Length: 372
Length: 79
Image (cartoon, rainbow over all chains, first blue to last red):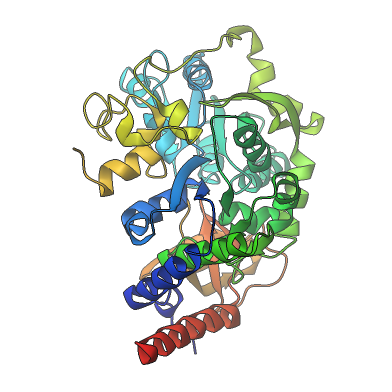
């Protein structure tokens, strides 16, 4: 019988990490060009920094941290929108975890909350149903964020709101998609990524198949990896082996959780509730076509973006001048190269979104890599 | 936002489409709305923001752990 602790301790074993590091170093000597691996997902950035995996690798392998932190890529104007929605009469704004601390142009939602706005952080979208039930005279707006991983949960919330007849529950949708972000990164001439570690939980939902076009288009290896340190090191070994052989394939290291097709029930709920948005502006990456979702016509009566469109300005707001979050998200600047890192911008008082979330690259560097 | 540690199903609530899971000693009820196949006590699952995302393939996990053990032993023997 497999014990629960085997399921993660086996993937954190220091001896295994050391041996995998040796195998990677041996294989890397066969590679003619430097290997620049982008880990798209913030969870992997966290693992790399927490376990110091970057220090276990030879000089010709470099990590480039990608745009896969769902909190980090929401532009300021969308946070301002959320604050404006919260300021409407009789509105309760509900949002997930870290989102409440990300600065907008006039402050974070936490600051608006301290001014008396009814803004409630939650860790489970279904808690929104309870809030809607307990406040029948209020309009409850769910500020939905996240990649493919979190989208089906919003779809279930929509479905249940409909089935249970909660007329007072609306949605402000900010769900985004990974493959268009990979395309945006690869289209940037300043970015020199030549391999990818594919997201873990996005792939659990969407299946590894969503990356196949990217692998073929850019001829870059992409290995879908688990979040544990041994997972990441084995994924790097698989990438380096591909590089040594001069091939580029889609590979799944996280096969205990990820299949080619993914979670079909979740995908069906996403298709029922959402359609592709023509364009969405990402923090750091700018507008990317077809990179996000919006509610399908079936749910337009719950779309806060439509219902409150007269109070939501169509203004684009860039980051603070000193903040280089955008360059960090594009993988062309390391967090420690930013002038305000650890000085004007810390996890306690973040200037940019990359410092807010534990999945943000700046936050991970600050926590685990020390501040010089 | 992503929790990588698997959780064990300890109770099934079919009428509510939910299960109670144990994550390193912490028990909580989570939604099973995104899972088509029936969940059973003893299954290992991944949880994301209060929902079961999928079942972990225990055989596959064990195969990986055994493979790592073999690599360590083989390399230790040749050193």
